[in-house]
Image 1 (tube, rainbow over the protein chains, first blue to last red):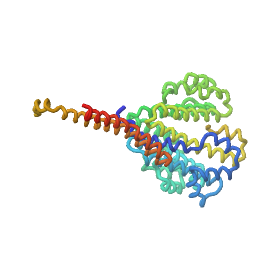
Image 2: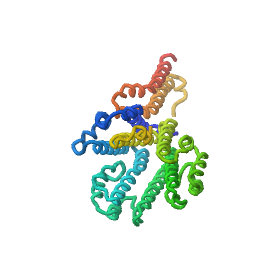
Image 3: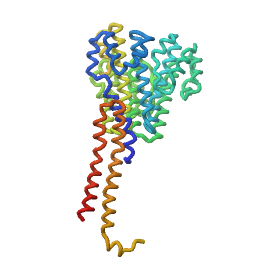
Image 4: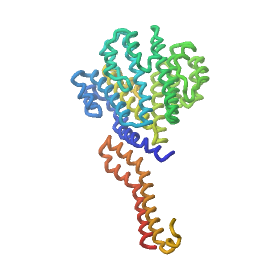
Length: 339
Length: 80
């Protein structure tokens, strides 16, 4: 390690560590579960989300306000990371956060496909990537899926969209694959092995989730293969092909060979609902990110750890409020949260 | 070319060079050490002003090396 190698990440790492210290502590979530929505909103309105809640308070109320405030805060936090980082860190963060562009494109196209209102679509848009909020609000006004796709013609994501033939799943798979293959290429160009390791683990976790969902739905091998993302750490191409051909029960047993097994071993029997397995896998990703960020403190990893932690905080808050709104029992809300 | 006889006549010159190197190199070393700490301290401070005191303290810790350099320089100059 050269003298300046550590120094180039020192600033951004210290900054995200300080930002991580300001996230809502884990002990707060059980307390939220005992609160009513107005209490939670008030708590959130006095926390790091104050500015967003105040700003959007004129336009929205209740859970809509909550949803928009969380999304805006998430987008601004991620954008801030891009703004305060430099050189390699900046490049890597920008590339990684393109996943939000993919998210937004999917959200808009899905919304148009199912005939959702502009307001409903906008509620789920998080402008944390390279696509601007203003541009997206314009695109949302377009009436048809084809029109929306044409509006994305000048973006780097167009190659995944242009083959649209009325099946949403196809372009969604293409978008995911395009994102990960571009990201792997970009990261490989910088030679940052730590990021690559993190990324390939993320791909593995994503693939395992796809496996569980598809196998539970009884999909055929070829259909599953289309949805998998190549480039994983432990689940290489040959493993993916092998696992895709197995029925669900056999697949669960085959997972014992991989290190992800320890995350899901105790819930692997409960296949009636995949929520436990999915939250466990999310938790594994989070713990993994935080562990390796301590092994390599002056690298991109603490930043990625923060990006994940922040997303999970927002997701958890959303789950609590949405769950409370629909009067779900506490244990169901808890099962959906990553804690 | 330096005349060797001139050096032999007055070793104080070399002692002064040694003293200069002791302080100078120690300063460069401390500077290299401080660059990452300073950057990190500013980063933490940008998020939370409470880190000012801690950040300042951490940043000046490598400075002690320069004090060792200074002590060595003073010994060189005044003892020899």
